[in-house]
Length: 88
Image (cartoon, rainbow, N blue to C red; front, side, top):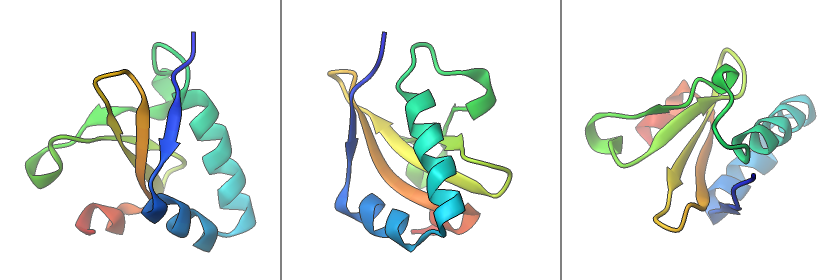
């Protein structure tokens, strides 16, 4: 079973700024995010503090995707990049 994925305009802009190799890793991570349940290797976890409504998963050691799980089960991708995205 798979989840539907939607992208914010901000996510799309950040994605376009990534180098080609990292873009490919992000694509693979998004494919994995669609699976139910989430694969353990993505290290999906709920964030805390001002981002407590959102989740994060690992693209690689340095890069993350921040997303929201909507009531209808869709995943809305919000941000992508290194750890500095937590400050945006």
